[in-house]
Length: 129
Ligand SMILES: [Zn+2]
Image (cartoon, rainbow, N blue to C red; front, side, top):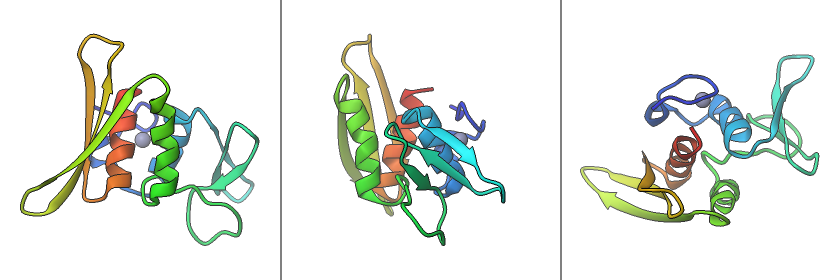
């Protein structure tokens, strides 16, 4: 399954500014704007500006790394869908995030990653693709 914004395979979408831009647009429905020097930021529903990469002064939004930001993504789903999370241990510890749509037929999407925020992002992107 590929990201509807950049075309990357979602399971291989690594953390970083590009994934954050995809999450902002596809999942949060925020606008992603590029400023005069080519730095992208997302504008939330209230007009708040969120940088998508490190090293800038102001508010950042890193749902692929920071659990408090990925929780905003989870909250998007809680209104109409139920989200469940669990981790499975293999040779490494992997996080598995499952989004299940109880209103639909048998729709469910799985995101896996070494860290929970990234697993949440991958599952959310799949659910909205
Ligand atoms: Zn993408």
